[in-house]
Image (tube, rainbow, N blue to C red; front, side):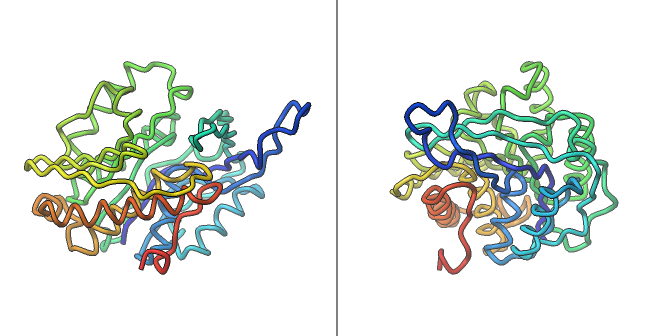
Length: 300
């Protein structure tokens, strides 16, 4: 089992650029949230996956839970609450890159509480994005991260930095650095790395996504591998990084490397295969609007 912990929200995505003379684009709701997208992508790839979060009992929340079920994701660790669902309004640039404005005041996912022990068969837990910023839930997710790492589980962290949500940048950077001793695999975009002050050396492995330039891994054991991106007509990049997270975990699991020791023992050829899978999966996500990760059959 791989458990993904973090927020589920609704992305409001432009259907097309505004018509001439129209002040605003038409927005369509899409199921989203970095951890949510990662869980959906893992479910579609076919591995046993569970989602750990707190989701609203409103109509958006019902749709989010239904999306997890459709992807085969276990929702036993999903709590429900009466507060509204967080909204993220996406603005898509000419190159397909997406920026977000968040509406997260008093929403259900912010009230996440530390869950009971995870299933005994849990090999890895993935964390990231807004859930590690917005209190009081952020402290509960942080406690979960530390608890599972101490239990010997593989921990993936994707900070997926959203500066508009971070009131004190330096305090967040300090908190981020305090997580690194517990992290088995850190996934960063180039933009994340720049904002955080560089690529850290603490985790067992760091995967850096470079957009059209591909993906790179640097391990504590000295392995360094770069694979090219897969050329694709980009609809948008929403969910691409989340798909990378899922493909990395799926690829490591397929090689019996989903443990701190197993990942440390993986050589350049193994990492090349894992990164190539992640690049192919991300390209498929980029080729269609919104966060629509591929199914296993599309990567066969």
